[in-house]
Length: 333
Image (cartoon, rainbow, N blue to C red):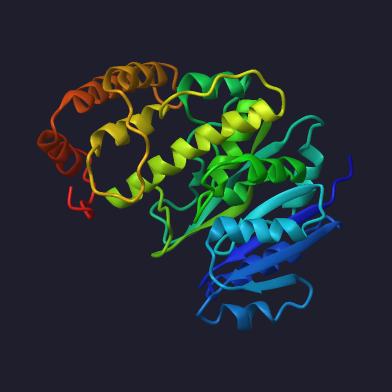
């Protein structure tokens, strides 16, 4: 296979970084690469920076959110494979060349590692922090309700698959399109991975997600909402491909259920259907048991913690959230 690539860059007020992202996309050693950038109504110097690069297909629109911006870029894409490069990240020059060499017929996604840079606590650290899942990724997703995957810039996807996900999925709004794509690919069982570092993930003060740093409750509630809708959508996508799977009736996933039960009743616009406590607890315990990214002892500790959290009243859960986990209570919980 000699694939063509579409590198899609979506930008909003990242004028300080977007030039480096564009240059990394234009510097690819693979000859068949198109670079498409959609600016989502930036109010900083972004548009001036983007205009310095006539070799890219630049689209400017009013602010609509990241997922809508990806859709717009996808409409202009013609490549066989798609990489959605965050405008504060960078690709290495050989990224597309290595993806092309590693691509296997029949997969829809290839994952690779990103090295963190910028405001890093541990220089040289790569994402994801855990080993990629080897073997039956669909079974792993069904057993754990989750998937190990890198941030958006660390994935290459079959363009037709991406188009299918965007057409079928529910509630793809604002941000975090990567969880919809990665969970859907996992449930299809068509994911490959490499431990090669093929991109750079920038850590800075305005990251939506800052790995390893103190988390706000509002961000956790948002992430649970994303997870629920991405899970539900993954089952719809799989069924659209003819995969016989039964959609779960509630949120699944070890850590997702832990967060959901912990912050149950917190004020939020990110509302997911209520998970029955005993049924959700049973699911969460099972999910933790099969979670390969942590050792057996830690899994048992987490299962105990989930049980305590699920059965505790709100006052106790608030204390656990603030004093044990150290979450920032920015929602009045």
